[in-house]
Image (cartoon, rainbow, N blue to C red; front, side, top):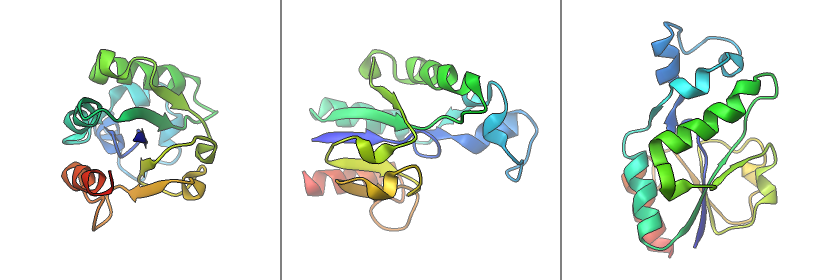
Length: 146
């Protein structure tokens, strides 16, 4: 099964970078702060879940957007993947503002923006009650549909 996983608030804890910089969750245009994406911690269970999906033989990619007004975001996201997922995710990062263009079976995303709502496969809405509430429930849902 081909699975795409969003980064922000799915693999990475965006607010963790704000806390490290002594900013609050209401900071306007926080995604445009240079280097902010390099400061993010993983969401609990995300790294283990990614490795589990790969170990089960799924074709797993990271599908994310990066703000145009923050040139470091693109390289920061790549560095984050290399640091936290290493070789298991080597060359598996796709950055786009048009997520509906990718073709696969499952998209795990916390939002429907940037084309996620038009994804042609099964969308697991991460962080929502039910099948996408946390990484444990996501893995259960993927097992159920595969």
